[in-house]
Amino acid sequence: MSRVGKLPIPVPAGCKVHVTDDAVRVEGPKGTLVRPLLPEVAVAVQGNEVVITRKDDSNRARGMHGLTRKLVANMVEGTSKGFTIVLEINGVGYRAETRGNNILWLTLGYSHPIAYQLPAGVTAKVERQVVVTLESADRELLGQTAAAIRRLRPPEPYKGKGVKYATETIRRKAGKAAAGAR
Picture 1 (cartoon, rainbow, N blue to C red):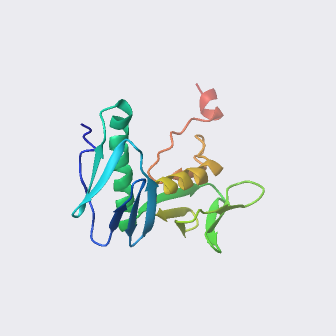
Picture 2: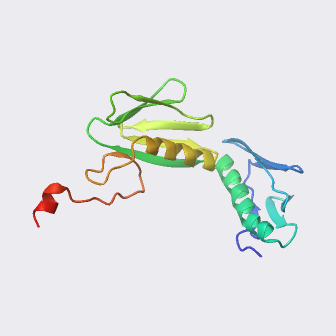
Picture 3: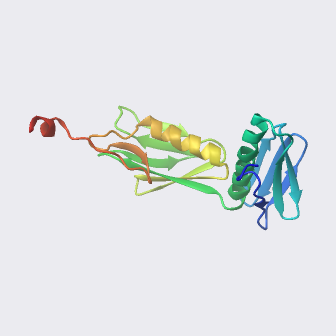
């Protein structure tokens, strides 16, 4: 039995979980999320807990058991508390600002500014023009958005310029001057 899959998911006050034959829907103060269910697993709401069980013991069902449990747990946590990812922008003249309806304007050393349209459900706050905080109820969408913004100018190893996660550390390399001094 999957150690992750067998754990019940507590549903906090203010969240509602609705299960149909082919999907699970979670409603909470931060929004509503819907995810289709796989045929190998069954989801049931028992009181204020959600229990995930698998229908048989095949390899695929065993693999999807823990995955489905974690995806539903992320939905419950996202609709109740939400998720955040913090990005930092390093470099002279590199900056960000929000304009209009969920548009993030980024100046990242190119000849033109980049207007990044945030997907529906993701919001951005910019602090001191170099710290971007992304918030969303959908963890998967939030991670994809943060990765797409980071991909616009990934951090380079010599000066550390670029967009990086706040928790990420950049391994710096010595430049040509240090290599020639040996």
